[in-house]
Image (tube, rainbow, N blue to C red; front, side, top):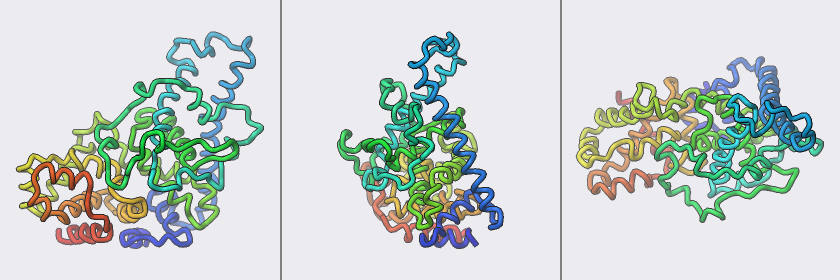
Length: 376
């Protein structure tokens, strides 16, 4: 039912999309009777992560200046031992700074991420808590941003028409007064916890673009219970989604069968099958799929369209039985829909078309992808 519903778009009303995504991303089982106990268990687990990974290290850091005599060499921040918890703390700060930089620029054309959440995290904002929050850690960490730029080539440095970036100082979101939390700060916390729990991949630029639409969908739902627990629910859905696409973010896997190069080649081999003339034209002009499909595939098209349209595309992607095969067809559909311009254009013109995709009607694109799927 969810899969059929998803392919044709899920209505937003009454928490239906929220619910379908949670089931399609394997966060909730299909049996309704199990939902409330599972949600409670997972949300409690997330609260535990916050305590262990943000609050406890924050308390230890805050106490450091208070009880100097208790600081042994082992616990001293200048201890060079790589296993020292302070070594971990400062390494974490490098990751945190990169996340902070990216989430402060999430969907700058929308006011949503700068607004305060109605449900700030009380564990973090409790005025009784004397500990260093992520907000304070960012303020106090003066690491040079160069040391933290861990980028996947091409993920975010090719501008997209729907992502007009204001001048640097204007485009970064400000911190809200104490007691309030902006939505971007919640996203920052989700990504930080994910990085801590997944040290093999930690955080790579572009993950912010994957978590953004998930969090937005859950945090704007009409059901206040979904809204209140948007942070924990987003974290687990993001983790599940990343387990399916994380290979796209791991450079060493690029050329393996599960890596991004293989998927990009698959877009071209599908195009060759469906539209030989267009395929030959792109080959002739030496337009490689890396020039545009890298971003399309890695970020699940989240930078090519406006957020409501991205969410509509994701309905179809999540409902895909053989997950993300449909994404290859969507990419193929995007190419065939502008075939006339591509066949007439030169290299420069065509590169501009592919990097600033001209069609904004996602229903047309999804219909074309479905036609391609049915014509097998």
